Image 1 (cartoon, rainbow, N blue to C red):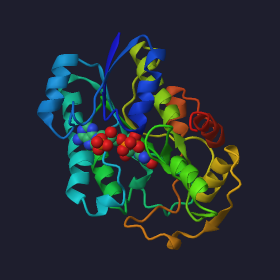
Image 2: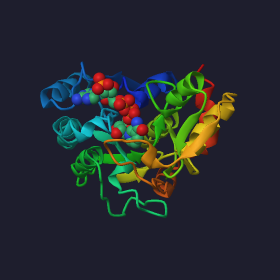
Image 3: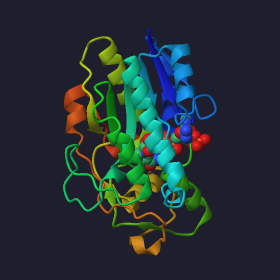
Length: 288
Ligand SMILES: NC(=O)c1ccc[n+]([C@@H]2O[C@H](COP(=O)([O-])OP(=O)(O)OC[C@H]3O[C@@H](n4cnc5c(N)ncnc54)[C@H](OP(=O)(O)O)[C@@H]3O)[C@@H](O)[C@H]2O)c1
């Protein structure tokens, strides 16, 4: 039995891990959130590790309020930087494998080809800088891997998919930005990929290789394409109008280009990834 401590498990990704827990009878999950294990508090982490003796930690805990982070700089850095630093330290000290999750916002969004893991980072928001600072704490840690993901959605929590469905019911027409390209990621798919890595490494089917990896679904779209597909699948006739980013005043600048190259995680860990449209259909089956 492999003991896996999950931090931040009440969020989207953590909830998806809870949803698939029973499919993995060789894994013993210990699900924790802010009130049980605070990643910014080393004492809280130490006592959870002493108590549960995990071989793995999966970190789903994060400060994810991208716009609010422009004002709450200290809080964003405390959770995304110091919290990750604490996790890295305990993973090093106790020989625990750590899977940490980061973001496409570590790039400046000016790219034109899918971002590879070895490309230069250049975050342009507080959130992006705080997440990069967290990643950097794990750079020389052979027990740690960071998975950068993008446009995460789920049937749990609040996200773009749920917002579009709500607005399609409330409004006669939707205006959605058509000048930002990326790839949506169904958090259930990412959760499965993470557990496949844990499971395959624990059974020596594959070797753990530390470092940074990119994971999203396959394909690419704009937020306008994404919204149109959501409404089409759910049978809404509400018109969706493409608009430019300057229609929305947001505190944090959004990347124009956010597509990541997934070949490293596919090749290293034999991960199969769905096209974004297929995964969206799977998720929407679970949302009324
Ligand atoms: N959402 C996206 O579009 C997106 C895109 C790219 C990358 N990511 C990354 O993907 C990962 C998962 O994102 P998500 O959407 O699942 O996030 P989420 O829904 O915001 O969940 C994060 C969880 O962490 C908890 N948390 C906050 N501070 C904590 C602390 N000090 N100790 C323990 N738990 C704490 C939060 O609790 P509270 O709610 O009580 O604060 C929440 O339950 C994150 O690393 C995020 O940066 C997300």
